[in-house]
Image (cartoon, protein in one colour):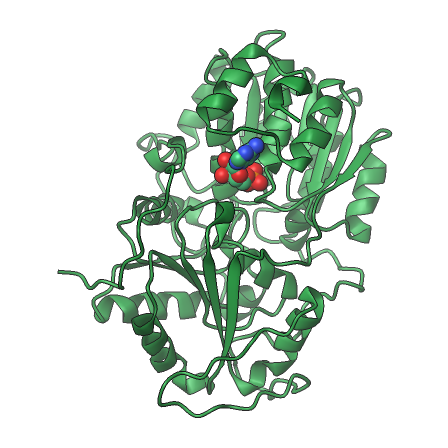
Length: 484
Ligand code: AMP
């Protein structure tokens, strides 16, 4: 099937061609005609499937039929993290380059003033995290009665982050007659409840099982005592041909410590986690994208959806407590048909979490023994020792077969009492900050939004990398290089 058969406009077909896409992905084939016809949709799809284009492309053609008015958006896309929102905004620009549509990116952690100006000028679509959206709404910046399309993206992630009450508040503030598209990597009972509540006779589409890992990724486990992880990781890094890599840690403190250690060892490395200011998080991602950074040391804030080509390796410093996070983490490599490598350091205390992951992905990941090191036996039923911190959270996290509870509300996921027309102090937005095990680890810190300039601060621009199409071909692998 070709894009031309999907009913999209010539302007969009040109933008698609400019993006280098030759044929629609399965979700695009299934979703685009229905969205163009105005149907509600429940999409079970992960990032990496072409999901973003499946809703942004038809949305652009629908919005092109009329014009934006000041403070009256006609479409809203809700994203769980600031990074994902910025990435979707970039997609919107790329696919909408032959249209004259305006968008506003509403995310926390950066000055509100430029976002307010975009709303004032008239934005056809708002791409927002729930916290910042509600902040704008409560300040009386938005009039919502003209909203025709709502997209709730990554609904399961919203649930994990405790944003569902905020999402429900937003939906209640929107006109009843609208088109609603809801995407989730897994349709948990809570997501089904939302769908039943907010969607009207939706078309249900599902692409690829969320419990599989890409075949392009070669996975290995390395058994190691917790105290030896730093040394084992350094040895592993030295032995691999790395183009660029993401090292995932379970806790923010670990992220900072490891980034520091790598820098001390002379590597170009940068940390990213929810306690860092948004501007710094974006700069760090941009450096990775540009190839200036060899290692991104990350918490799960970077695990979902981020589309950074040329990540040759993913290292898991600890076993994630939530098995689904393993799939999201390693999915940062092996993208677009390229080969990827995923290693996970597993201590004896992490056996149970590893067992959960292997059961979920339905495969036993092979073990590798590093040169000069002894094989460590890991018992997959071993419970973590009490009072001892291992790389993984002590609980196995929500199981696939168990209904997931809504996470406790985070700062910024405040509850109601909308004073729609009163001016309020700037609302905290913690999108991208929630990482279950991290939150247990670190005392709550002040939100990044509070550290950044307020309304009168300098404008913040979407970094250039988000506006650039991914490179056509990957560059050859390089040995880990040290800073000069
Ligand atoms: P997403 O699932 O929306 O995060 O998209 C994952 C990646 O697939 C992004 O880099 C998109 O640019 C790319 N992509 C989306 N649609 C297509 C397509 N039809 N052909 C090739 N690549 C695509």
